[in-house]
Image (cartoon, rainbow, N blue to C red):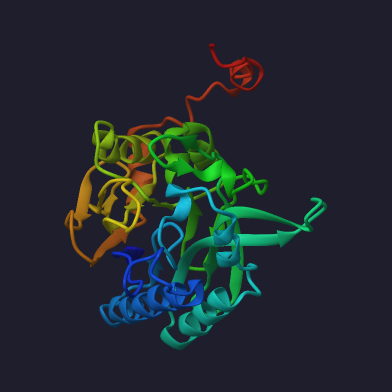
Length: 303
């Protein structure tokens, strides 16, 4: 019997009442609106047979990195002890669905202010148990409004693979997908599906959206899933999040895709047994030459 896993991706517009900033809406209300919206969408995906549901980057709020304001640190929560992850753990247990839950993480540490912050994703099993977390390794700081280094420390947990019992998954967050090294590490460690929750806007580089992740899937012989927001988020003039969440096969074929401009759940049945067939036909792992790759970690980037 083929080992088929049904997965769903959720793309959603900001749900904050009356916008985000400058309207007197408390941060707690902004978060609550987005959490409630996603709870309903997860339930819908589960009712359609989803075994794994992945949410978008920092799902429980707007993409606030469009500005630099310390007030958004109040949005951060502990993983797994914070209220959002705890609530999602209860939902996963109730529905029997595994969840990938990206959010802003706070961790007590040696910093002078007593805490450090990460762009993270919690992974929850179908029994509601906390499986582990990934912290975004590659953190951008670039115009027009991706000021992530203001908020996040680069991840320090490497590129873990999470065993859900019925399959093994990896998580790469948004900007990470531009860097093939971590994607390869997850493949070497047994990932069968890699999820890439993102916040990507339309522009001259959005053509990369359907190139990079399929290329990583082909190079590493696993399924990949890209998740993006939709719409614009007031009051920032960052641009339009263009959706188009999708799944692609180990041969780089997009097999299910969402729209550009609306809330949507996109689902696909992924035949994990096909991974072995693809790797036999394209034996890239067999033909690797790791003894020759030392310069990849020694050589500095060109100026």
